[in-house]
Length: 358
Ligand code: SF4
Image (tube, rainbow, N blue to C red; front, side):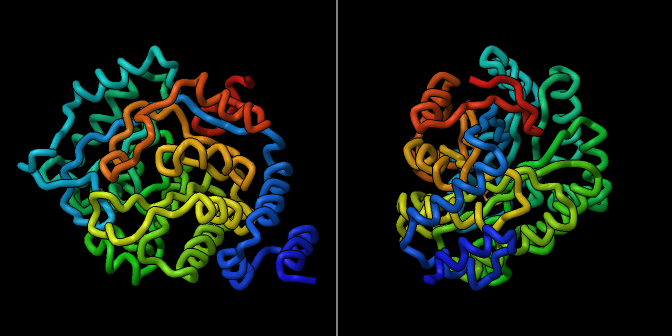
């Protein structure tokens, strides 16, 4: 029996995959076998459904005090690219997306040197007051840690205040690779791997659901990718607070790590299948088409992904790193993409309640 068959038998017996299984899969070129196994896992969970939501992205500012070498989005105050949105800009932007039928606003931003935590609280309160039916998914653990630093409040107090103001859940960004070595090299000035996991745990215990990401294809090793997945799986065992896992292929253009190549389609699909097989306690795996490209996102739904994010009106962060995808997608285009891959498009809200099956 070869190794992929051994892994298949383990999965059939309901046994959890180990680190060595993950390393084997990450090195495997038997992509089609991995895809079949991953798709079978999805059949157990979502059947043929592929979820999407209608959302808009708000990136309040690109001014950031951290200097992550993989980031093409951030800049210093005074830079010709620098921008910051006022509260009024934010409200107007969301209002202009209402016609598209958004049910969610997704907010992530740079770590601004001057804005106090109260500004961000006000943003959440105001959005909640103006658009009470829209779910606010905002602030990665990196931002939460920064708010704690600038306000002097504990992580828990920051989260409680944001939740009281109307925060509904958290995105999964800022995880990059949960490895001390990698973070020391590529993002030494922001929340550590332990911070990221602790903040997610605190958020989950407060009843805030979140997502989780992996940014791969830069300086990480295979072992570091698997350790990242195992850390997420362990925390999910503890809290059950993660909704979906989103593997993000690194876009090198305009970053400080531009000597590497963007992960190929083969590598991207292998990571999708690997994630679906290792993260047995995650309900969903999402293809973020802005970073994978639309074609790979469509293929990914046969390799372990059961969610394509989303209509994403006006994305800024990945486009700063040279993404050649559109900055938004219509529902018609998204649903026909899913249907033409033989799956059933299902519009969901942020918490995976079904809104409409197409
Ligand atoms: S990744 Fe986030 S924290 Fe790092 S430089 Fe970019 S905006 Fe700032």
